[in-house]
Length: 454
Ligand code: AMP
Ligand code: ZN
Image (cartoon, rainbow, N blue to C red; front, side, top):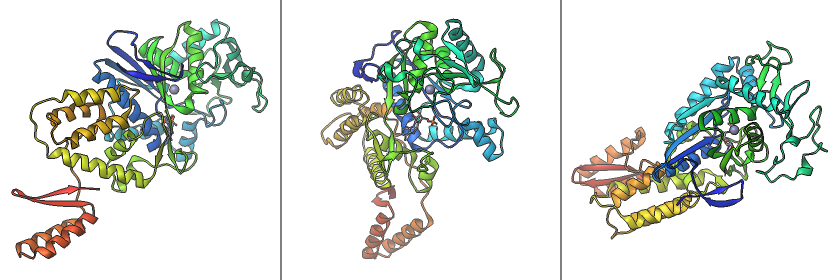
């Protein structure tokens, strides 16, 4: 039985699918105006585990992820510049060059981290007509109003506004600190923004209300409902989405359809760096490429993510990543020595399932894996670890292919020579030196085996 913590009810609940044997998931995806940093990627690792657990539990999964290539403003309050337009201006490129370039980099990182591709990548600019149709529905129900800046959703007309973030009604009234300008309530949000000077923006479209572009929240409602239906199982996002973005998604979707939008809302807590959210705007961010340049395997980062539960903050430091990489390599090295006895260890598998099905408790599930690995008497290690790795996605049986630096190769050669000359003291000294570089050597009947240990 899979249990998931639902932000909507603030409880861990048993997952009950809408359709037997099927799970529909929508994940808020990247805004493709810049590189996705490892904080962003922590989110996708978490939802990848969710997807793999559902598949492991026998569900057919349809996973939809949006690609925001328009409408995400520098402030979540419908103000500021469009992030994509701003980047295009700065880099002297077209908006589409920008969004495709950063999406391609993101896709590469996605596969380096062994993330299963969503069944559908939904690009916002490819779904403008669906977004316009949704506004029309809301307009027909009298839930929108016009300002000089765009078409807005009137949150005071949606009774349950705030249920996800447990925002109190009284805080919804005309803001004291937030300037309302022409907004009726401070929580009202843009569905459509006007291009004040058509032709100035690269991305703008005709609509019944004038030339402009959709508000950021709208794309997630329009696209999730298009691909998963008006009522679907699971919606995921980062913790910062709770008070505004997801609240607004619920409001516009449920107001338009009159149905419950989503059954389970899952939110990830942030990856921190020096005690703060890792984010581009704070100027502290690392990419997968940057980690690779420092000698880290992307899957060591995946392992690092699994050491923290998705609902707890995870502190990124290079020391923590070093430890994760060492542990990950040690695990793979031990596993590479195991012999397949063609058995399955049901007891350990059950223990693993219990941990992972308990709101995706990856740290606990990793403990079970280590317990199995260290259990000298346990039968069925190979097959059981293979099953477990269907969920972890750590390539635990894949031979590590790594480029050995020239300096290390020279030391290995020197050691070989010393061994041939029967100068074992020198050979041992060189082996110790190699360990410091992160390589261990085992002399076997079939020659010397080189392993990376950190
Ligand atoms: P963005 O590209 O800014 O729209 O963000 C993409 C995803 O990354 C969203 O789901 C965010 O919630 C998530 N995210 C951003 N920063 C972090 C962080 N430091 N830790 C975890 N998730 C994050
Ligand atoms: Zn979204």
